[in-house]
Length: 261
Image (cartoon, rainbow, N blue to C red):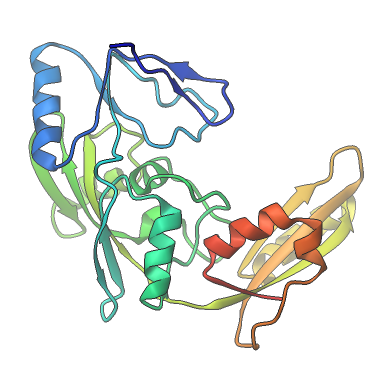
């Protein structure tokens, strides 16, 4: 059987492990870890490989969680969602929206697996809202000896804190419970600003808006300055920003359940 090569998103990194396993439950994960220990081999979990760095560092044996990618439970009253590590964030967002819930912050790209996204500390934008990893309430983890551990702020709190951004170092995350919030509408404002002015105003821009981002336009002295704030205004159609930057807007439509222009 030919070996499978794993490429990262932009093709700058690639790995060809001896074997790629697709476990379906914690017991299979534990078995693979124990087997790796017995044979003195390393095993590494690979998500969607969206990083351009070599942090994945795939050794002889890899795991992928395409068989463990389900949302297990949504508790609207307690504002919680419990899911498997391979659940992609775009799918998780759709499930949350169906229950009137949402995450309050994450990045523009939402094709990552939940475990990969949080393990690498992937961030959203803005100065007020912590990254999604801080919204983890519980983690189930299969450690390096194949032992299944359930971690939260009351049970092994130091390990729990480290596991929320673990960089693949503590074991294999097998289940995550996140806190979430009520779904909300958000309004985007886009302005073209001189670089010097945008940088001089950066502290104010960050503090005055719930979310913001600056995109430099190459070979110009301009930034596209985006600001995003919650709104109760009636939802409208898409304006010029959608036509000017349709790819990004389509990302944000998934990133936040509802955008209002």
